[in-house]
Image (cartoon, rainbow, N blue to C red):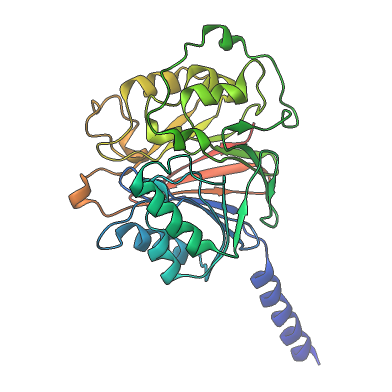
Amino acid sequence: MFSKLILVFGFLGIGATLGASRDLEIYWIDAEGGASTLIVAPGGESLLVDTANRTPDDRDAKRIMAAAQLAGLKKIDLLVTTHYHGDHIGAMPALAKMIPIGTYMDHGESVELDRPPMASSFKAYEELTAGKRKILKPGDRIPLKGVDIQVVMSDGQPIGKPLKGAGMANSLCSEFKEHPPDPAPENNQSVGLVVKYGKFDFLDLGDLTWNYEQKLVCPVNRIGKVDLFQVSHHGLDRSNSPQLVGAIQPAVMVMNNGPRKGGLPSVFETLRKSPGLEDIWQVHLALTTPKEINTDERMIANLEPTEECKGNLLKVSVAPDGKFTVTNLRNNFSKTYQSQ
């Protein structure tokens, strides 16, 4: 009888372990200056934000697939395309052949259909996503079980009212200097997301540009402070205004730059002036920026030029108590932070 009880409790223990909730996980795939961020909810459902570049050898699709396998995924439940530029959508057709994808989400029709390559790419996207596509509006919530994900920007428009705890006047708005119109207006349409898990919050605005950032933070800050910020537009100065960065005041920033794209000195200067900043992590060493301006080498996933790059990942694990740990999978260096 006693041995039978041990056996029963043993099976119960195994079942409890297998069914146990894990941390929220976020992975940054190295797309050599493109964008692809994988979010895995504690229960195992997944959201992929953007699908990086199309290459003849399907490099980026294979890297996304490797990250999905590392996370233990058999499918991608949700795929958000922030906008339709090739460095954010290029690997989608190849990836869709490698792993099942559930629902596709985006901001609506492309605003660059006057450019034949963009028109062709968007038509192919519509064909691929037919019957499985949802257009996102500001204020929409993305249904990832166990995680609260809200759309704060889409199709050039911000969320209608501030998020809970936000809404304070932004004193930096008086110093705002408008930029010339962006030459690639799809950037302005970028879907922006705030991902919340307990006390933790993460902001991803795609390639939203300087002038459009103001819709979220001027004259009042509709987002509030966040714990983690994916540096917009790969660390280019067409985005990342002092008004945005100074309003959200993240403790940690992750820059999905490439070896020769993004990571500009002026952007690093703006980021480092943000109150409360603890660390910046980079997907790549910015080779065209002086080495001393880049972050600590331990926090950079890839150090080589594209031709030699292994595509190492950065990973964040968020515990239910709000603590989150960033790990560089190149060297396994990690650091833990507390949510604000």
